[in-house]
Image (cartoon, protein in one colour):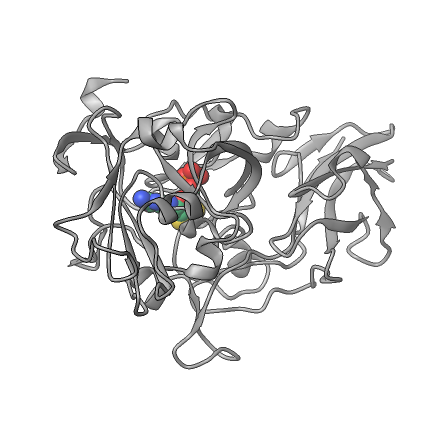
Length: 381
Ligand code: MTE
């Protein structure tokens, strides 16, 4: 890494941790930079396998990636939901070796930012929302290996009284509008924490990359990306409900049709993307094989349809049988463009619960969970 990129020094859990905006290279063919974040380009997935390679996996950083030293890193659990470690000053500690010595599990899970697709609230629905103007590339699938959070909680002395588990990142405090909101942290209800959540130390067969949470991050399958806290250090386990700006102020659905104090967002919605550049050029006069992927936090995808005539007619896409029951579904469809010019491609998926992508997503103040059908422009000729 370029030492010139190191712009801040801070103390993280006793270890001196430098930070860098994003550590990995951001080649424009793979990723689009959006302030402190990087969005995967969908054309970079064309011809790829099921998982997203680490070099093109999207990055969502509230601030910067900390460079955490693995040898001094500790997971520190405390709180009123544990036996004998009520205070932050006197936690139960595990180092990386302790976690690696516990039974390991590998899971293929999808991570998606709640704001993925936010820009379409503005461009398709004339309803702009503040926040990172993601297209559809704030999503990725990886093989994560680690230890179940439930295993670690039990080793730490979990009691039946615990209701919330709040992991905290070791990245710098998040400051917005002149207010320091502290470290990125979001309470996880104990039911989910004890279900399928992983404390992951590997991504696609290798140690986690710096930007994706080295040495250890949470992976919370099916839930919006902010639940999957990176660079986790302290973990509060509480017998009373916990609150942070990430479950009170952000990542809630506010606005008409939602409760006055908003709705806590858990699972992601159903979406589809073509593995094509935005404004792709497609040769005229020949059949083309269009490829894409669909996914939903509710469970597997049951059907995908595409339309090339502004949504007048819809045709079933061919689903790759290898992906049946998986966290996302690859599909193809053959298109013979009727002639040169500008065309719009549409894809809509239906998930296992019968939920189908609507023409319009329901707006909300912070632009989360866009599930509307995306109008993907292409030029033929
Ligand atoms: N954890 C910490 N500590 N800091 C962060 O900024 N961003 C969250 C989550 N975990 C974040 C974090 C959000 S909003 C998302 S979408 C995912 O990490 C993104 O994970 P990735 O950068 O590995 O793709």
